[in-house]
Length: 209
Image (cartoon, rainbow, N blue to C red):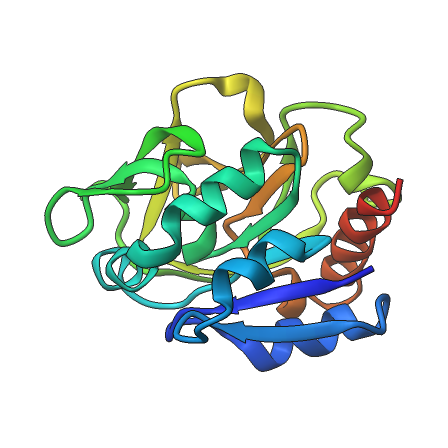
């Protein structure tokens, strides 16, 4: 199984690559400026879109290959978004203006409201199941802790894609979403100790079926 991690200039590549290598031997980082990038996307068994930084800059870098990523997902390819990658899957974001996303999932990314005293939401927080019995969460107890770093969160149009939600200072937001072969986590599974690795392993195991 070929796992390909897209480097678009804003990803936390080393840690997610090392985490995937615990479960899959063939893991490679593919750079968005590679002249063969479109072919590399199309032939991947699993694509991962990580990310740290601003939505505006990320979507600008991804523009030349955005349709390739969307087509990959629509054709049944296994796709995982992490943190900023999670947010890029949605229709649009209010970060620094209003910018269109990949629109794989309908919804808008918004900033935590002024009622939240500490932004960004940084550190360990728990996962509450919104949708039961998803294979991505096999052997993952409810209220497990995972690691977050973000100031914006997604508001999906279709709540049926929400797998887990998380409460931060009274704001409940979607922390894991998934539909068919596309999943995304607002938190960093690669930085979330044994629980994060279990979630990542479950995702990769489901890609083999």
